[in-house]
Length: 480
Ligand code: AMP
Ligand code: ZN
Image 1 (cartoon, rainbow, N blue to C red):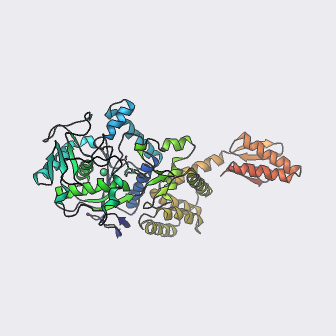
Image 2: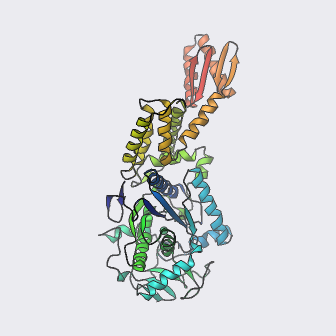
Image 3: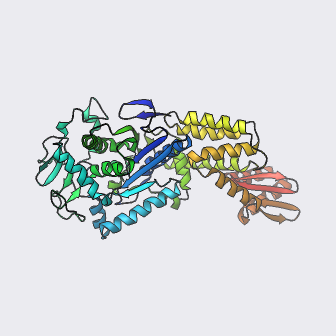
């Protein structure tokens, strides 16, 4: 596979420390609120990447943290802990908030066919690991104590800005408004590894440590959790593009200083989903969720399809119109698959040919729109329906759009189609009396030679998403 690596700024052949095995790490959600569909864009693309790697034959060990402590309101070290903010907002404990929004996150993932990583680790469960790393960093002079906190000393590194060689201003994306300077820091880029004193007094969760009772900084959790479950050599680290700085930059600084060797080979950053007003963000309080999409009648998988249409390294703009278009295309695709007959033999040679092409095309920097096109190509292939269905089922191991399951459900519904009789005129449809009545009205208009009225009714039905076909002795309709 060829994948763009944010650390080297180029597309590279994907290689792993141990051949055939991928140690993969994903920055998980900060569970103080629902995930918005922007966050979920990142998780969808990371899910496709993981599934593609498995499809390509790798054995993948995927690890994800759940941030339930230490992520302050600014990605730099100022402001209140986001978890505490969530707890105050809802008048609950931090642990209640963490549990509620962790469950909500995995519910959303399930609806979007996002697989749960092999290891999911809440940050509060690995305090000993962080203390061990920080202790070594203090002992080796990479970290210092100031004003009760432990800071990483960025001046000890030859190269701090991993993701950008020339312009540190470009990296300021993660640093949000209202950042106050911390006078304890020796250098601008130093960051907190362990807090015993923060700008706010009432941090809910605290642990004993060699530096006093306190809590870990946000960045150390990902290094600690990854080293615990992925080992000392990480192959692939994922997150949204806002994580690149300062979060991932700081993860690299502390991990490599601790390990004494390069840590992660490959960095995968998903660009943002913006709404028309700009970047979607949880802290703004108003954002789109999967539940909201469902309330408005969208299938969450239509959103997954929408995400797959665009490349992960491009900003994606959300609008209802764009989602409507994606949703209509997804429904149309399902209907076309449903029209295939699940009978006959699979032509293995054709299947292998399509699989190999898919592997190669999608393997070009995770070209997911090409993957979607591949499904349409399979539908047009000069081969048996059984072969087409087998190919589409194979592709769906990566796409996870429930293509075969949903097509089978449509087929079943059509088989149970209800027949209504308007005298000698038999209407076969999906059992909706209102539609049946319109179809019959169209027939009567035709019988009365009122073709304009018959056409008008046909158009009206079309606008409702219903297609009518004239068949011997009546009509048959279906939703498209
Ligand atoms: P958080 O819960 O804020 O820690 O973010 C969870 C994940 O979503 C991280 O990988 C972020 O980089 C990513 N993310 C945040 N905002 C967006 C967005 N608007 N579009 C895509 N990904 C995002
Ligand atoms: Zn992280």
